[in-house]
Image (cartoon, rainbow, N blue to C red; front, side, top):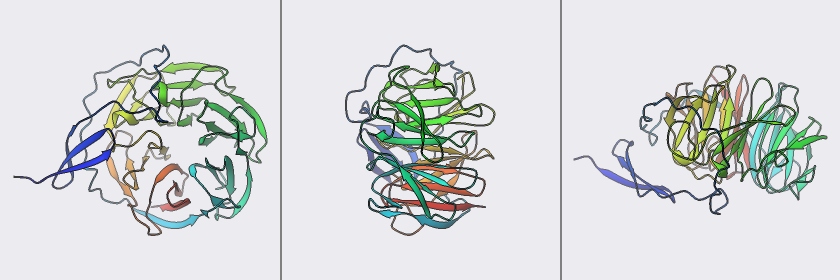
Length: 346
């Protein structure tokens, strides 16, 4: 008889894990809470994604995962409110020169570090989400092709663009459509913006000028349906990857939002939720906040391995959230440690 272990991984789900770490079944599932603990708001009318009758995701042995080949480089930042310190780091972006832009939700600011991890400058403050240089709930950020920074304020869904020096350019989002506590955003090669509208169970697409050009997805568990998505990234061929967090899976779509693939990911709460980063070679990195690690998948969902583990060591995580990559490194925001951890690839 195999030994059965019962593990509570979040408040809405209990997993049965067989000896050896193989996911066997899930029981006791209830509807997840909205990202802020409020009732989920019904989704606005939207065009359903095209379904392809994809096979169900194959359960993966998430408990025992071999590490991928990376080398710890450095940690950046300490706990605090001064220059180079973090109170609640959430997300990160890296530019072509290796400069890092780190979002601190608690302090409502963006800090910039050079390629060696030295503090350069900061801007923003905690305040009202509708004010140009203020943030009420700074959740995520991405860099566009010109090096401008796009930030997401999750309170009302304002998307604000800044120059690399921190000068405000323009904002959009709630003036075009209502979102409900969005948690992540992505950009494609044409600087179109994809917003994970978490509480409305959908993806919003804006063009580079901030005009709404598409609304995709609807609530549910079927192919192309979403349950509180927390992040989205787009590859060079227009493939769209969504952290469909309430459904415990990654979904991949083509540029028209036709469902192509889906695969399982570890359970996570949607308040902090997994975030995604896509390497040029096609590897998809997914943060696992509850597991204290980062998982790596190929473009079709094959599990390649993990980075890190839960702990206090220099190369371990307490609460990994935001993530970004460049040609040489992987950068992970650890909210628990209040640091950024850098790993070299290869």
